[in-house]
Image 1 (cartoon, rainbow, N blue to C red):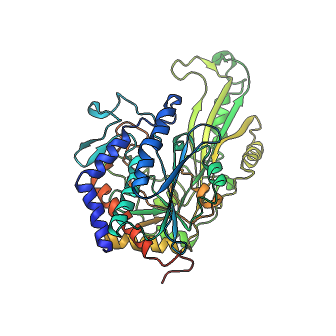
Image 2: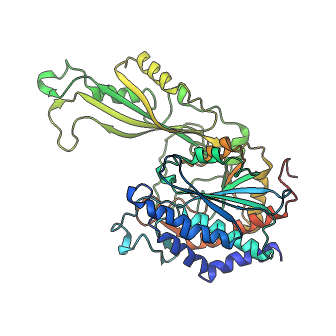
Length: 465
């Protein structure tokens, strides 16, 4: 058998309807990790669905309990040779709230439904569809090689990603030897666009910054006290304006990343950020000057105001409020010095005349990415190009958040993500879906990657020629 045979098997799996039937069965598990009553469903997905599926692929597997008791994990392994490369694959079987009753045309979020080129269902894009594609591609390669993969494979499935992966780092650290590999390759998030295969090497980090101005209890009549009482809302908006200007440009150096290197610019030189018709148009004259849209999104930091509150916007009173609050978020790339950031913001606001603004941090996650010199990047890009005839977009990092640092920092692996969704997939909202043509292509992309992995005599350790 050949590479073409493996790809053909993956495509046949899609065209026969077998893959879609498999995904429908998985979507039916109501694995809402944010719902405390779904613990039985979370465990059932692993025991009733994942373990039999891995057994059929000749993987051994075991359930690993969460240290905090929140959500279980599954570790699966297939070993063929000590000299062959080993890949670690990841997926999460939990989903966000199903939002029953809010889906278009009365669709049931717990059953897949085809409409045109879309396949609807909760988890189709995030993440049941994506790890199912990877498992189906493993099956296609195994069948094409007569029951062998040609490499060693390990798989971790978690059931708490949508609650922030609270125990993923601990579980991986405790099972470091069992998860030892040469490469991490997994699928989550969207491609750059539906028609362009994409690789990304990590993700931006994030930190929420709470700003609070508490001057007095209650409100005071704006006619009797206006002009002699400080207004906390006025103070707050002016304090924020010293951090980020009216065009979204960072003003405080402590919020900025290191200067963009020529290497990063070269990776992003042919990357175009073009929203589809049902996505918001890019704002003109917004963001850091001198950068392309791709550089702003994938290689720069942004400070966003997520929420603000003062008084009662629904029923405003003619009174000066006593309090004002805002929640900001800094999305940051690798190299940003976030240690001491809150202290730097606090000192900056004091220097600007806003000592009354209280500053605190919450909900932070790390930025991480694979070193650009890793030979796995070119290997993966070459494989995708051979399968699709398209040069994949190679992004330094995903714009959003994923637990990439667990794999890159705790386990010390080169990380490559191969997403199978697209930006307009409505993940985390009603009408979540995947695109059928993209799904078929994704199956072939992964079959090609897994076939090529089995062709390597051993792990990649030097530059590819």
